[in-house]
Length: 155
Image (tube, rainbow, N blue to C red; front, side, top):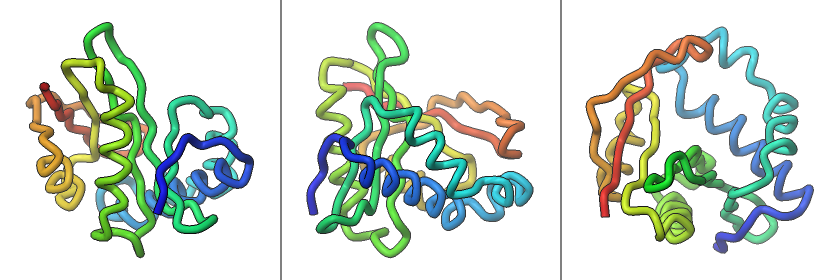
């Protein structure tokens, strides 16, 4: 298993597949069925080819099995914008490798934040193990029919 910067068209398409599959595996019952029905692989590919910066992919051989997106949201705050792993790789350490690599990229920031879908207990346990704590901040994301909660990691 390797974690690397996303670079090739094949990696971009692989990231798109993980994104699409991740939503359909992790979020039924947590986001609106209507949103999931409209979220196609083609839509995810279009997004993937537009968002090329600050993406790390986890590869098992040539297959992309996970990705993390990261960046800066304020002068003193980095953010994990996305972290998805194919369901068959849940519990294998891939998410930890991606998180560690993304946090290394954000090493200059004293504070790292992320938003997650409220009610996603599996993700919440993972983020807690990584040192993230809820801020108490929530927001309704009407486009997906769910609430998001904000977590923070302070170094």
